[in-house]
Length: 124
Image (tube, rainbow, N blue to C red; front, side, top):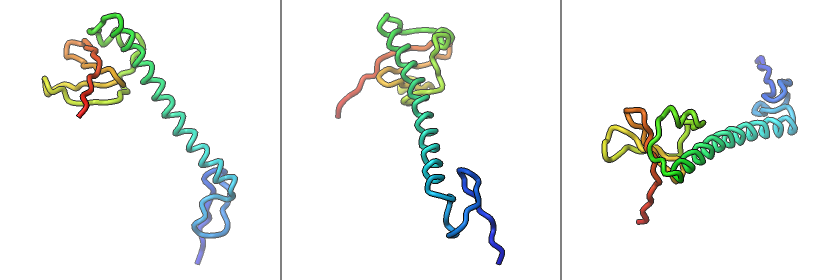
């Protein structure tokens, strides 16, 4: 019976020994898992920076009394519409969504305006 060669996912070195062995050494296993963990952590940190920037923009507008702003103007301020912390159907219209960014929410209207509001929480 011919055995198929197996290679380490970290260094591409030939793996010898048990058939269920995934790495050529403990150091390769550690380096591989640390790299995977670091990449995941960096992705979460990148998304968190985007959400924090979005929050700061909305918070500043809200503090200035701006409740309506054009989509283009908000985008021009650096707001990234690809990321949000919550999304739910608007009970008033049923056809639009209320998008959340931590303790603020906004609705994107059909006319290209964004309406900003603070989230109100109710305790049960």
